[in-house]
Length: 279
Ligand code: KIV
Image (cartoon, rainbow, N blue to C red):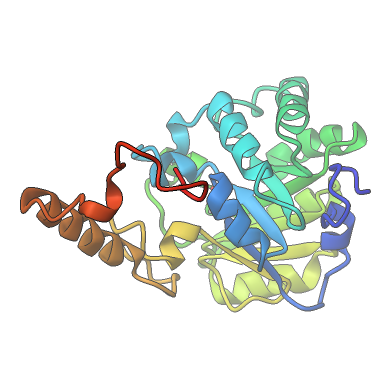
């Protein structure tokens, strides 16, 4: 039985041990049905604060609350048997002090059954990461483009070009030194992501960055073609589910308006046809 109470569940030390191994496969999940699909194929299910933009229609991740993360974390947990569940700490829930971070991360771990939390930031968050790790909370770091700082960055542009590369390399080193078991490298140049992966001793998981070395993460709605607001360069779409859903809903609407649905086989007779009638 693992620490998460799931006998086959992947643990943070196992993720850390995959350095230079078969690439770690990670997708976001926000609901129980999606978690079940992710669990069948992925090593890590990330309950990302991207849930705010993807499922709640928020303009950025800044409006996501701890209660939202806990609610989605609980839902995802019910769909997982094998994948390590990592829950994002939302904006405002950890930056004030290590103590604030511990109080909120402990809630996330206790209430959702997560195996780890993820938080954004580099050198300035290293003391907080060390504080959590020393108290038994596994932490995944997140450097490069940190979407919760979108206002400070002035957008979602590529990070780490020119002299900025040194800042992000220092961030990654500090996060690894603080004890994070893995680090998301977000939207940096290919060469910087490669250099960081080669220099830190922990696994790196890339998004918007470069071909996977230790691992890759994407937002599930992006690869399924469910999030149609924009089509990012770094995403490969493996399905066009929004188009399929649109066609299905249009067909349903047409059937209802033309009285083709419900049909005789969908309605209940006055007398039960036998023991095998189903709901
Ligand atoms: O919230 C999220 O989905 C993330 C990924 C972008 C890594 O943090």
